[in-house]
Image (cartoon, rainbow, N blue to C red):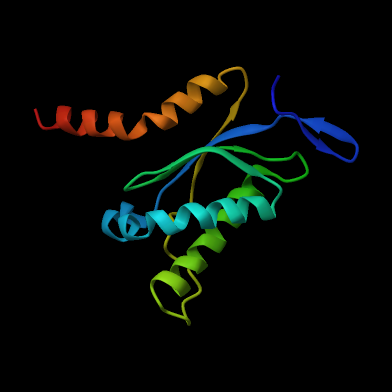
Length: 141
């Protein structure tokens, strides 16, 4: 049976495929913080009663399958994740206490609802690294 979420007056199963990038797709900066950022994103999602079901931090983008309760909009949760993680990156990793975190993530993001295709989306996210490597090898020719 599916994992059905529950609020005081509703049952829900709202999952989204979300992708966003760091500004200018800065691979070096993003590569240095990948391991710490996993825990930060999970904690932040929990603050909005959301659960990251599947996720990958690629060298140049964040890719995740996330369950968001219907009382929050997708834009609200993604904005919260991007904003608070940017502040964390600026303060804890870059050791710059005065920086507010602006400018780390690009402004937009991709969001798609996940219905019956959840298994396909999960497999896509899990194999994203292999596919990126394969595509980069094809681009050489």
